Image (cartoon, rainbow, N blue to C red; front, side):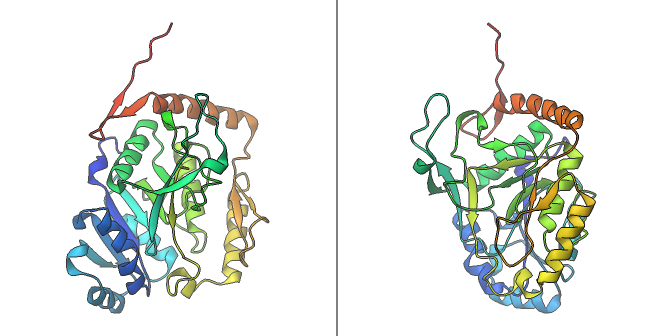
Length: 311
């Protein structure tokens, strides 16, 4: 990781295809409501015709630039990290985010136990602060890919807790609709289109030994029902082939998820590597978890370390 990367200098990259109206009504509206500076927002489209369409649809002062990349989710994903410098903090967002939520529970006891039935979703108060804190956490732990919970169901999410106990560091899927990276072009290389966010998660995990998932935050999207986007080209056969590719390439991490009935081949991530390697990774994560738990964020959003005295 570029140790000099500044969390305040993050950019937002939004790939979009044939969803100009969706982008305007959803993700761009959300970013505007959170007062995200326009200079941070870059929109990536497939060709000049799409560029013209988006320029005609979006408010001119709502973004920094509409960039012509390459058609296809795999190719646009490979294009975006090359557009930005190595080590740049990048937030990738989907174009159909209608709401960003945070899970809270008012009945957590002193031991940190709680009843899932008391979990409640509330609108995330400050997106800019959440992003900056997430990148500062990446810098603190050395885990350069962070993400959020893949579905906005409070029963399965973790409520916001003290000492960042809602943040996990082991191998867990970081869905592509809201994820941040300290740009590493090698880890960003995609070999597939459908399921490319699984591939990215694995590559950053292999590079760093862990990834950060904020299980208390998620987004409301409608990606499989919105027109355009990956649905315009997504095929069952491609999903099957890509799942098989990931299972063959990363057999210790990827397996079929028979619990999801989407009509496509679904997969899950879990580190099933040898016990000695697993114990080594767990030891490293424990050390980094200690550094994470001993970190506070003050009211200005600046991280300060807390020195613990032994008794």
